[in-house]
Image 1 (tube, rainbow, N blue to C red):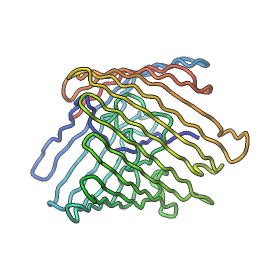
Image 2 (cartoon, rainbow, N blue to C red; image 1 turned 120 degrees about the vertical axis):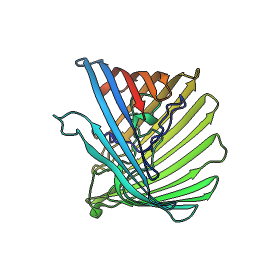
Image 3 (cartoon, rainbow, N blue to C red; image 1 turned 180 degrees about the vertical axis):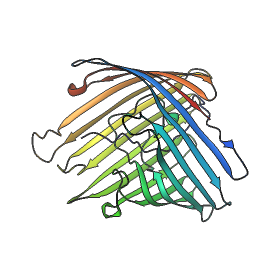
Image 4 (cartoon, helix red, strand yellow; image 1 turned 90 degrees about the horizontal axis):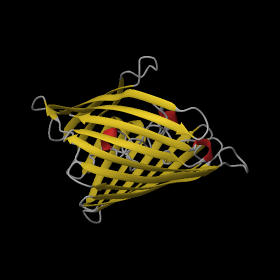
Length: 316
């Protein structure tokens, strides 16, 4: 049992200052997006070494404002190669209606609200996503968010499945979240996710907290998995991350993460523990051009070894 590749936090801005300014096409339409390229090398303790150099992604996002209350967004993403059949895809698209200053309702295909790590490289502090956390993906359905106060907001969604791609409403999914901002430095979000599977329901409780002050960004995160697979696996995931801005253009990130799961029967193949350590320095060549390097060491026996990567991302 491993997590989905699709992660579940709306892409943010690195403390490095990677800019993602919208291009204004007209009074109502604006565009944004990014280019992402990388090269990797893998040195497992057992098995063959691997080397890659790829154009990872090109994304173009369309934002259209009909009125002060109604807006729409559509993201088109190109990733992979012609051979793997994932050259161009519709990533998400939804309508947003601001019913009031506190209540917003969305309908369409949208990203799960869960998780600390972002879905896009433009919101990441390092090249790779942790193998230890389980987030929701892109979902078809409806959601609503309500700002209770400057310190508290809530969110709920009814979708066609939290982890299945473009599923049907017979396998409905539910997602709820409470967000707390007790101070301008501290943010805490707790998200519950449930998806109905044939014969059982699986769920994940995700919680993370961040502390941001000056050049320092720190985060702690945990997952609790319940009946996550047909084997009724349970487990926990955990993450600790620190990003420190050394100057206006340089920063370094350190991350420790891991997962421990257990199957319903003793000695199950799903009984495993894995941990990993990641270090990633970054350098901003321009406000919208970031390059970073990464060294990640997998500590669990099945995947033990070192992975290296260099990535460059340009936003617009």
